[in-house]
Length: 478
Image 1: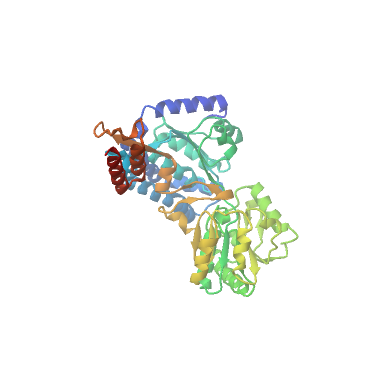
Image 2 (image 1 turned 120 degrees about the vertical axis):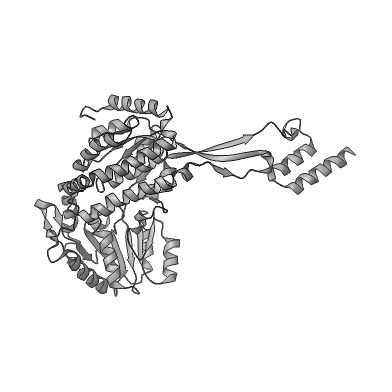
């Protein structure tokens, strides 16, 4: 799409897609399979280009891009191909006595024309993963990549028309004006956006927003393993620029020194003595986000709390992995999602106090607990409300397609991945089949007392009640 894309152009685009969707091609199993196989082919033919674009946009290490962007997408696509027939098959349901003889089923039908608005931190994964769900469900769609990751956006705009059915799958590039033009239109589903824009047309939405994902560290753990897993979830995933990255740690005052020492040692092994020069760390996406993160570090309440890292290279948009100990809860860094390589550590007297601190804030997209204490695990699962809970690891739930990924409350609504992606772009249509045989006049007026009792028993599904009602009616007739 060109730079002149406005509301009128968006309206024409959506109308065209809706006309093509109504032709029914996308509803077929064959069409869906062909598109998903084309996506796999696109990965095979252009993996090096994808890696290069991710390097340009975020300086992502090749290993990180290969695993968290391309491999996860391949796995998602292959899973959809393998299970698609089963997903599409109508689901039979049991029928109540009142409807006998009858049969019923739930039919999964595509919603129609979907809008997918991607974000910049995983510009390939978070663009195409929902596209897999939309295609598997049989929808037409428009993908709007993030302009903050321009190389990836440009690549998607070039490759999608080459590999997908352009009559029902389009890409629109651009910034806020193009996004606003798209949001003015009527869609059947919007994925990633603000609720107000969707409310105008009562459009169902999936919102993935994020929040401050907490991480509780108990004392009865293996510190080296725990430190590695915390680092993997925080800094090995886009240098903390991930919606489910641990945002802050809660641990006891006695436990904090051991945890800090373990994190320091493992960070040295991961990124060396000068992490600003490490090839295994992503950079900050742009100067605006660099300034936002620097503001956190320069806050008077936390500037003296840095116990590791803190080095910055503004010219190259790099910030070293940074640990901050005993950060005040009223400091700037604790008031909003960090979304970067800074990790505050909050200390409490008893580990159970952590639950109150978490629940006093908004519901996060993820929450983590490191412990061997069975009672604490159970309390964590029962007490903490979050999009997902992970015990003794970080971020690993993202690789499990049998678990939904999504938020709750302020962290978002709706979930996807695997079958959940198919369901989120699907309408579950109720279908009831009846024949002309066995038409019992019980439901029809006029209603006497005996017929009413019999009808009540039928609605309750009580055969004994129906027998009693019939006996009663018979006696009344005598």
